[in-house]
Image 1: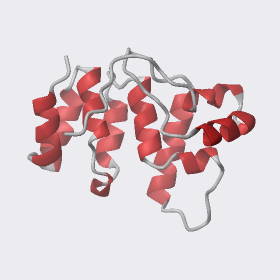
Image 2: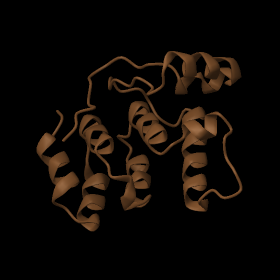
Image 3: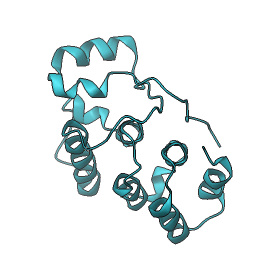
Image 4: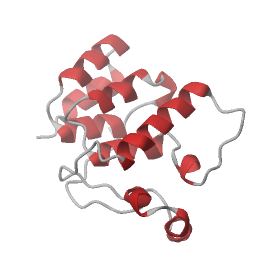
Length: 146
């Protein structure tokens, strides 16, 4: 069951070390997703990497991290030589894990944050294995702003 109190503490009260320990020990996919949805990307890549290392990280959560991490640019092949190496390494690793099927759907809703025009454009350029990035997943809505 989704732990909104823990997600709130993750977002506003705990320091990085405490957040990382919680991410590593969290056994609830819904709470993990809720924390990801409220993650502050100015805190860097350590926490997103920890979410992805948690065996309870669902496909919806991985996709949320991908889009929140500006992975749409990778899908459009809109990268340039001035990219931040850590970002490019992270988003490429996440892309590869998603298309390799490393994450399972777990009943958590995910609706790709793209409009109809983007969905159409991407459907024309993505390979079949990449369609996961534009395909909604039905389930429990854990996208709650804390």
